[in-house]
Length: 79
Image (cartoon, rainbow, N blue to C red):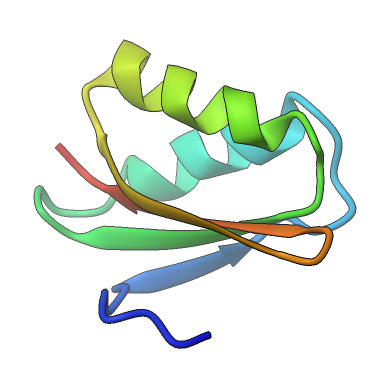
């Protein structure tokens, strides 16, 4: 499925378990400019709960989340 959101960067955390997808996301977002979008690909089932909580804690926006089979896709916007 193609998404109308155009990310500035893509981060593939497939195969990584909690907390690594969130830690990598935090590290990837840090140098990004405010308003830029990071697409994160994750396979950790816990990611479905982790990413909304991460967005709430950090103030970065979770624009969208999708599930394709066992893969989760999140669109995070840098605050």
